[in-house]
Picture (tube, helix red, strand yellow):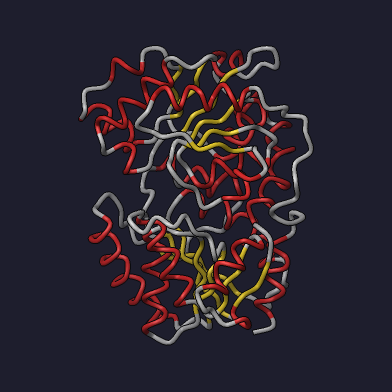
Length: 366
């Protein structure tokens, strides 16, 4: 089977690190080529992940990033179509909910090349959210929808997706947590690098790890100001690895003064993030992937959004939503999650950490 895998953003690189390993272990039954759209075009957001996670080098690199949703999706669609016409793979695989995901699914579908969607069935039920639009459309284009949870399966059934197209696979992010958690601890000194980060991550130095990057939070000056204000008043020290677009928006909105109480770094590789997620007292994020990574590493989370696609984390208490326009609401959520007993058992929501093997086995049955 010839498989073309489309990736473009950090969460997809992490998922690919697990599934590409399982595909390689098929002994050639599945021949995978990776197409990188360039959606995350900063080397710290892309090249670093490929290198440290052992992802096969991209056979095709489109270099498309930095534009609007519509412009990016259109350019990717055109460029992916050219690759598909030249390579004619047996199937195209996409992950998650980015513009790269939708562009790949559209290009393949129009050429009657089967689409495989890993992390299918997630729903925030906010149709104004670009990610929600991308994942809903991709699910309905896909021949195979690999759903990570029972809730995701239920969403697909409710939308009329045929039963034979739905596979309850578990979550490849649980695989990544299993594979890389211990590796991160073993490489702690190397990963943390600076003495400042090493001191922050010491066992007796509680801190909050934060990531902020979503357009609805960073493009709105009032909302971005509210988030930075709340972080500046947090009950523990805050480490903020600054996403390139977040840094740019802070400068555009002239909010640099609100960064003064925070400890800043540039973007971090996945292993460093895993290590910090494991050692943090709390994670505060607007990322879909990071809120789940926090859970998988045993750390409570506050998600500065009004909805999340990972509803199971809310139901079991390990995650809590907070209005990103309301500093008081964010501070209250932080206090509530810091009071959570991080030693309590975590339900096995996302499978046993071997989802990638199950997906690779199912692909061989096509």
